[in-house]
Amino acid sequence: MKRNKIIAIAVILILIFIGGVVMSSLLNPNNRTRYRILEENGRYFYRNRFSMRKVWIEFNDGLALIHQDRTSWGRVYEGLHIWKYVNTQGRVVLRPDVYFADGFSEGLAAVMPHEGGYWGYINTHGEMVIEPQFRRASMFENGVASVYIEDDGIWVLINKSGEHLQKIDEPINWRSQTQVIP
Image (cartoon, rainbow, N blue to C red; front, side, top):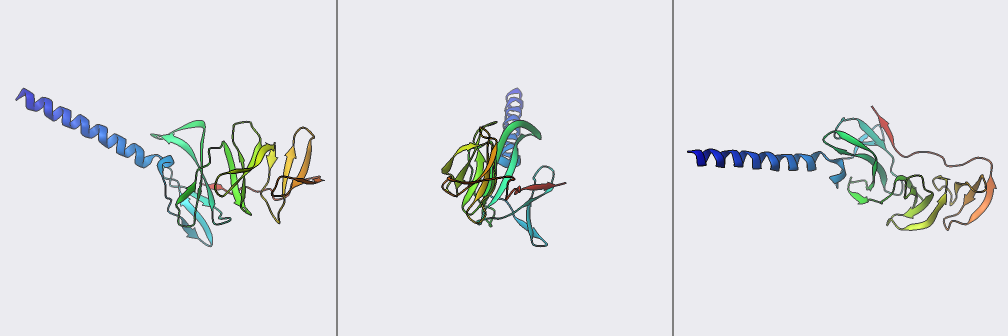
């Protein structure tokens, strides 16, 4: 009788452990490889799994940027960010290892690989095509983007090869791709 009681307690503990592992992986947004993309009045969004807020996204070059704080059992760990790019079917197609990211435009996306670092540009394969060297960087439009060069204290237009075209007074194409609506 005592042996059966011990076995029953062991089985219950194992089931609780397995249930916790399964729930943790289901609730962790960083484990998701697919998002359910919804449309409302011509705009696209997905729902944050924890708060059920609508997270509005914009597709450029067939990809949308999704940002999720790393969470575990409802706790947010500051400084650890997960950036993902999803296609129109909601499948994660790119997970760059960067601290900050912006949406794609004209095949390139501005990214900051390290906290407090410089911005560069990646292509849709996640390859760095313009090395991080700018304090701020905008999206490309009509083949150019505006970047801030800290050493010179100036804004410059660059082309898709990263070549400086001309100095400018103010940045152009300045916008963010994600917006969280409570």
